[in-house]
Image (tube, rainbow, N blue to C red; front, side, top):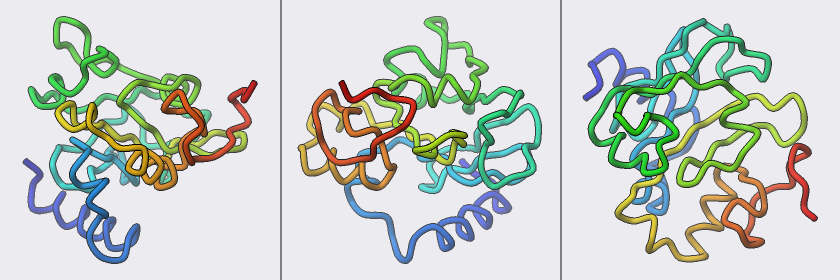
Length: 171
């Protein structure tokens, strides 16, 4: 799927982000995990999908909270099938142009995102859970994913690992 140049960038980013292979609970349960911005691309660390396209180079390795451009996932039948809640794509399969707040101000079912716990909420990682394994995730796997992505403590609708986020109420 990725070009040789993209694979080189993915390998470098993977090496920078984690020592060794990804834990099984990440590799086996995600269709993609996009992380680290280079120019106008955010690369899939798992190497399964093409990069996300950003309409403006944010000039950072992350997408700043005040980013005014759009975020668009690659056009892929696999991603469309995984996006069962029609967040990344419309019901007609057209790519949605999303903003940082689309990812940080709501809990997107099956699209866990890593963003800073305190304002400003810079977007650091976008994941897309595999629709075939999602229903069978154990609480231990959910807690591990929560810790890995620093998800909000109630991301799974129950108190399960993760972080307190200052843009979420725990009451």
